[in-house]
Length: 126
Image 1 (cartoon, helix red, strand yellow):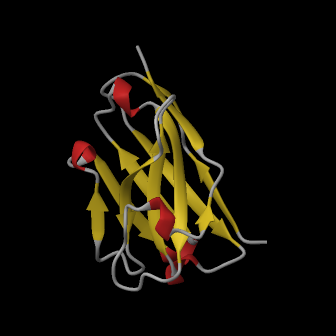
Image 2: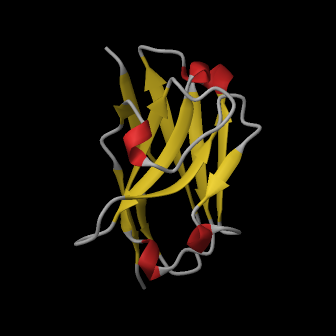
Image 3: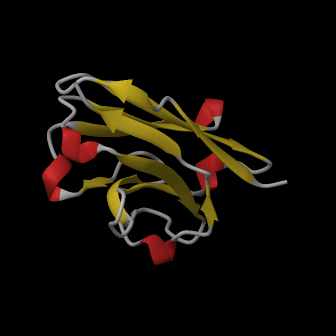
């Protein structure tokens, strides 16, 4: 069964950090670009970061540049999203997704992605 499982979310104070993980099972993650998305209450889901198959190419939503860092460890079949300097507006459910068609690039468009995880909640509050 092809599956992506996110973990690492939680409640954190403003200015804090979290590292989200996206573990794949049932398929080899290194043949897929990875996207990270989030959906805040009452808002549409948006792409925040992505990483190409090899990890050489990354992309970020403008509002998270300098605070979010995407990475991957293909040997562990896992991708990561390091989130620093968290703000209340970062509160959302965070999802990872995998795409097998992008070879050297990645994309922030959710329609590009084939497989999705169930999401992990990130809440930023004092």
